[in-house]
Length: 325
Image (cartoon, rainbow, N blue to C red; front, top):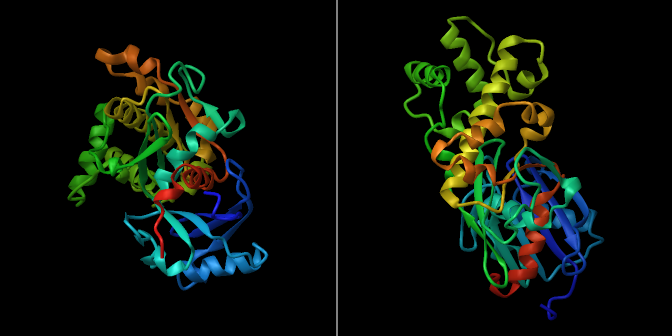
């Protein structure tokens, strides 16, 4: 590590925005963070160079870790919701690491403090098993999931496609919504189709279909804003309940006794409504293992740039495995 001089570059690249920052010491927080619009740049190399010129004082980092909202394969990346794709070797840095964005989010978990989290029930994080498996999930443009497994010397992120499991419906009304959406022509519905920004819009439409009423197609932002509208309010309640069941399934599947953390772009807008919802009750609603789930803390991440924190942690603990150009 000492042969790669500071600062190091960290980035969180989504379909809409690319967030960059610099790290000046091991364990240090990212600084000089800037957000660039993906649409304003031809590709990742151009955006990186623009950031370093305009916000990084022209420094040329020797090491970097990039978190990408899309599939990664060794040194190659492709954004799911934008046209950027390529190889991190094209960046011309001495060493570069590439992660899925939820892998980076998972790596941030041991570094988040009290001000970064809103408790949603269970023991206060980190709870009774701080060196146990943790998991993070979150609705945004899609539904991301990742695990974090402790070893003797480091934390190991586990990427997965858990957002594409079947919908976690429990009540007859939730089942009716799924049936109505399928009857309308949806050949396949998974959890992400209901638990994401677009999923909230789809859920609102499905509730309207079940009630046999015509309703405008609303975005998630519009649904959240219309608290006095009965169907919009129900949509948020059902969304939170489904999310609780989904989070419980993730906890059981991964054995995440070190905590379940909620991220993504949707939930920070409705923190108090999540806390007042059935989320935690549905999370614990697995009678054979209710005690198991009640012992797992659930928290909502409100830190502004957790993926950058995770990318910085990756640089500290895994720099020897980064891709050389």
